[in-house]
Image (cartoon, rainbow, N blue to C red; front, top):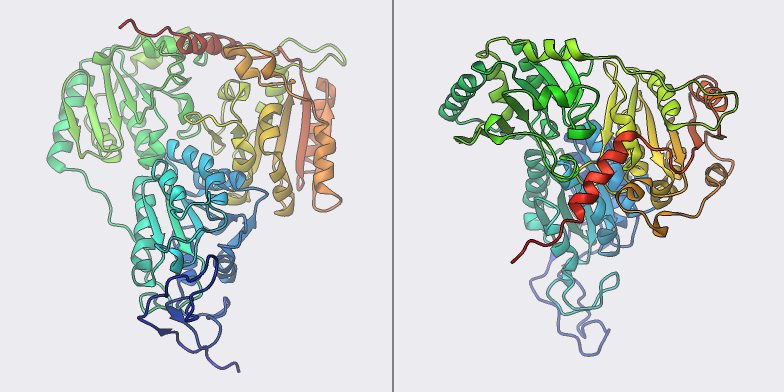
Length: 609
């Protein structure tokens, strides 16, 4: 049996100042924490900082952590690997690790990623900003400098070469709701727990930097088995809730044809079930904003589609915009979701319900009222009103089918999505990349249990590759179907490698139309044309004879049907990559309309002074 590792001895003396540039202090002291032998081994059950963090991640529901190793985080990674409940997934780059944590958080409710200091932190920053904009709790952990280097005037590698190496922290302050710099064991427990709890409470990313010399050190604050993590629930102000409900009931019950529209903040507010309860109780026609697609069931009898102004699904905008009262639950109105600020809505007709606030028309605002509580209480008080849904039912005409393809005719995008629609079931999830896939996927009717994700607020092209990796890892019993444009794929293609290594079985439709089509419809130019790749050959090179992956290229409907048959039958346990060759001008009519309106909004002249 190995001898126990001696406890560290603590020295109160501070390091002596440098005598020479780049030299150790003359008295030989490098750290205020000295060990008689090596630190606690990473596979020890000792209550170390690294083990505490690993256990906390497991307790909040994280079983996979996406990482890129670097010298500042290696010891921490040892401890994460040693945790039986955690699976460490190495990604090809930090940006994709962040996107993967984003996708994982969408499926599991929380995600985590680990990178190294500054070079890793600033690389992952864009993905964390996207998670912030989409209200996703992502725990972003960075291996930081040795604790003794803080406040010393030393210049460190992986920094911009200044004695002040706080640039990474400053950058993360804008895109996270809490930042913890752990460079002292005394408050490490408190900082880590506060960061994690804040992420879960606020449904936003947090930043945790952990000095590279601390993960292996035991400390009395880290119990051998951490106390189970729990959060105090948020509560509504009861009087405010009752008053808000009373005002909303009066507002809505006098309306002739009210409607409900669900928004993306339903997820952060954990109010999806409450939304459905309200829809069941009141009988109103209800729609979703585009960024809320997949958050509420589309097989509900009163669901009328996606409300997206001029590019809404058929007959939806007519019902919403002609209503005399609309209840928007968790909306985000930006230039994209409003189609260049062109929605035909009137504020005085609207009730806006945010996660902790209710605004009624031009009138009163009620704070400290939780969305979930408000919707449940409102459903008990509203009079049923099916007028708007009956109007929708009267005017609705079922969608037509794409023109039948001639034999070996070049494949059209609308034919592609007609076949993708047939693939959907309770065992599938759709990931839609920024671009024309936004609009084509919005028209897909999701069967019960089918999931759907896209990144509308941030709209970072390339997001879907990492998000597909993370989402598929989070829900291994579902088959993820990703619709990705060629321009977006070129941004982040490397982590198809990680999907293969993890044994994932997603289906990727790579839509090859020769460029950035969404940008073309906003403002065309030669910069929107990209170098064509042999995408299937690239994936085969990435596979390199290892792992379970199948790829093919299709140019007509007959080849597409055969490819889908293969992907869903003989290759159902493989990662399937289907490159779809389409014409560069083959776009949805919705993108053409949306692009022209967004272009007009972007090109508004300066206001006169």
